[in-house]
Amino acid sequence: MPEYTITFARSARRELERLDVTVIARVLPKIEALADEPRPSGCKKLRGPADRWRIRIGAYRVIYEIDDTAEIVDIIAVRHRREAYR
Image (cartoon, rainbow, N blue to C red; front, side):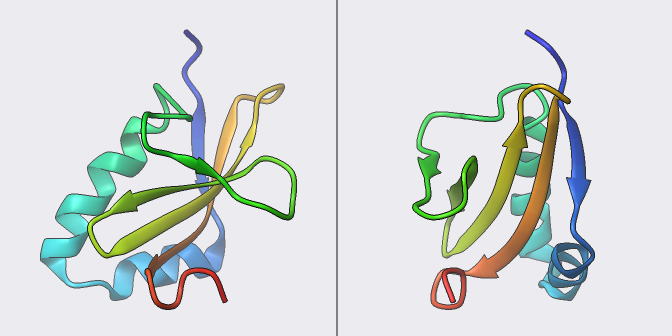
């Protein structure tokens, strides 16, 4: 299976940096695992833009897009669930 490259939108990087250290410790390994499996079990395809997905990590959501031809996973947002879909 190909190794995907993980990229972050500037806003997603800022959101990640603002999180509590304990939350970052839980979220970052899950994001890194997307390089091996961009569609892990439990992920959901979101309605709207093509190839937009989300994974749940406790009360937080990581929203990302997958480009299979370029083998890129682009992280769009890392937010608490109450703010993730606005």
